[in-house]
Image (cartoon, rainbow, N blue to C red):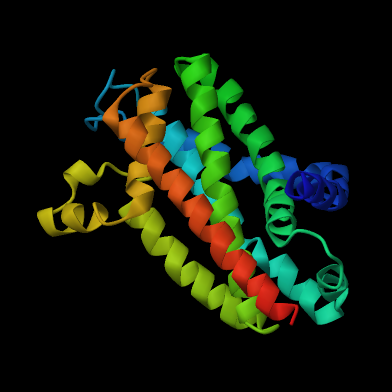
Length: 251
C-alpha cells in the first residue's frame, strides 16, 4: 500500500503543472502528425505485411518512438531539480523510492496517452482500422515499457551528477540506435542481412512488432507475447536500477 499511495502522491504532485500547460500536449502531437502527413505516403508502395495498410503499420511505430524519446529525455528535468536541491528534500522523506520513480514516470506518460489517442482519432478517417481491445492492450504495453525507460533515465540523471550535457549525450547516444534498429520508420525486412540480424538483438524491435500485431487486431500470438515480455522486463530492470540509484543518492 505504501508503494501505491506514494506513487499516487508523486504523480499528483508532478502532473499538475504539466496538465495546466495545455500547449505541451498540443505541440507534442504536432511532430507525429507531420510524420503521418509527409512520411506515410512514401510507404504506400512498400510491403507492409498484414493487410498492407501503411497507417496500420506506421502509427504503432510512431507511438513507440514517441514513448521512447519522451521517457529517455525525462531525466533532464530531474537534473534541474538536483541543481536546485528540491529533489533532495524528497529523498529526506520516508517515501517509497520505487513509488517516487513510477509516479514521476506516469507524469510523463499521461500526456503521451492523450497524444496517442489523438493520433488514432486523426488517422482513423484516413484508413486506420480500429481494433479497440488490442489497441488498448498495445497502449498498456507502451505505458509499462515507458515506466522502465523513464526509470533508467532518472537513474542516469542522478549518476550524471548535475551534468546536463553528459545526460543529454548518453541518453541520445543510446536512444537513436535503438530507434533506427527497431524498425520504427522502415521495415527491417528490407535491410541488409547484417542489419536485420543486428535488429534482432534490439529489445525495442520486439515491442514494435507486438504493437503492429495488436494494431492489426492480433492478441494471442507469439509476437505479442515477446513484446509483452520485453515491456515487463524493461520495467522491472528500470525500476530496480532506478531504486538502487536513488537509495545511493540519499545516503
